[in-house]
Length: 294
Image 1 (cartoon, rainbow, N blue to C red):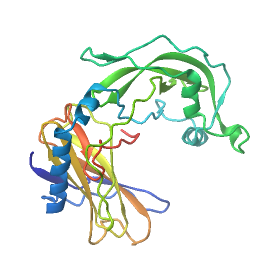
Image 2 (cartoon, rainbow, N blue to C red):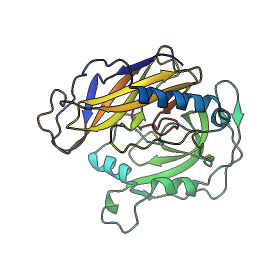
Image 3 (tube, one colour):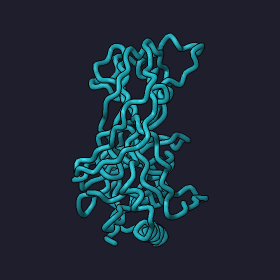
């Protein structure tokens, strides 16, 4: 199944007001504990022997959150807050009719045609603040809507996907929402494990290209811990990651052992490019959840 490697972050991000800045890496830890390795092997075997893999590779399962990132960033903190809160106001009409059937397209020529959503259904995802909310005057204004496409990462690689494109006042790049109706979620082929002692770190992946030989993942831990380690078990079809919270003295830069949550960025080295392999979280047994950050 491949060797187990374990690396600590080369940088750390902190969460919470008053937390210290980025911290340097704490070095390399080799060898996962026996129970961690056993769990990773069980997860890899479950995916290898499961029909879930076929559904994962033949269906449409986006990996990236639909997170709008205007080139150059937001014009102001108010705009950024409005986007995060879903505070939008519609200053144009929404197309009533469904667009013509449009297939999801992958670079290898494969396609998949799925039911489409209306513009109103897509807009309902981004506008989440009631009309009479106190901060409604800080809303971002949608001034035009058109049907087009966008590129997203999927379980089968990058794909060109039909999308509703919303023009936001003051920004050149439209806000895209996938127009394809979501498919049924793929249920992991193995049940998640409990963590009564709080020693398991929940992992979130960052975007990576198929040719990448390093994966970036984020994990949270307490300020009284020594940080996070991520073990990796590679096989032909999967890359299984297991996050562990390390006990011991806090890392450099931590001046107080408080109740604040810290988020650490971990670089996980692979023996070969990730390619089309499925990146799996050993704790949940499912595909690794993705953040909206690069």
